[in-house]
Length: 369
Image (tube, rainbow, N blue to C red; front, top):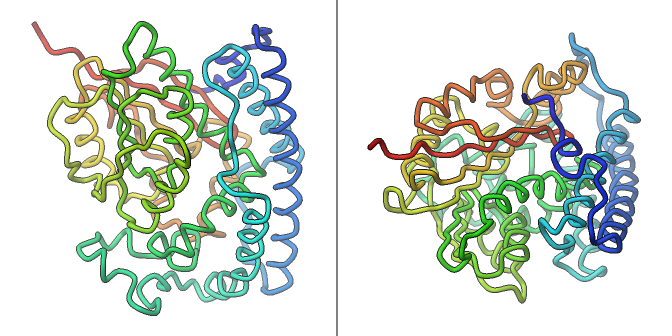
């Protein structure tokens, strides 16, 4: 039943014991949303002043800005209710000081002319042309990865890209990106009931800048955490984001060939990866995830909405790859994830919608006999 939202799943209007924690979380979320919504407007205005917008009229319904923001607020309320229910502690959103945050925002706006120019030219090759050949220390990367997703300068391979990624994503999602990621924490909390954290291992596949892993670490301080990614620059940023938290292990690895033993992991998470993979690679990665999970293990998947998840929003999904360089997005939004997961023994446990994302919770089938 994918039409259910996080507000239905977490809280559903329930008042938790920690009213103060809930209030503080919601107030912080609303302030964050207001801040990034303003930045989003500024960025859009500057982009329009630098270029001629692409002429594209979606054939499907498109939500209004007010509808988007209303749905985002519902997610932020559900996030606060999860804190009140004790499923995880309040989010520590910024890994930087206010001054560093402003520096990163300034760098994002300074990078905008280059990004807009590439968008106009439909040029996604800056990662291959960057000074010093940033791919030199990442040789052997698959071709589908070495391009500028979102027309982002340096793709996912440069230090500057890693530095800007989080403010770019939060701006794109009106400050709700962190709450969308945290929608993956309640199923982990449910799985962890009665378990000794010290004996439970979790891998975050394509961990990026490590923001979800830092959320997991705050919620489960003793969990054995590993993040893997194809970008050395993003892995370094992930290490910095752990801050004073207990360190996680970070591994340079391709999700098509995870360097972990069969049935070795209790939990695998994968957040906003699949829409950036070719269809055939999605299936290879899914087989790898199922391979490393223990029987009965938990798989938490978060990615973009797909067509018909919210029918009145389908035009937004139709338009997204036109504005951004997302070469595999069109195939993702119509892909049959249910069959893909079922074919490798990942059985349905739960699913919900979280603003512009969907959360699918799967359990690996127990061994026969």
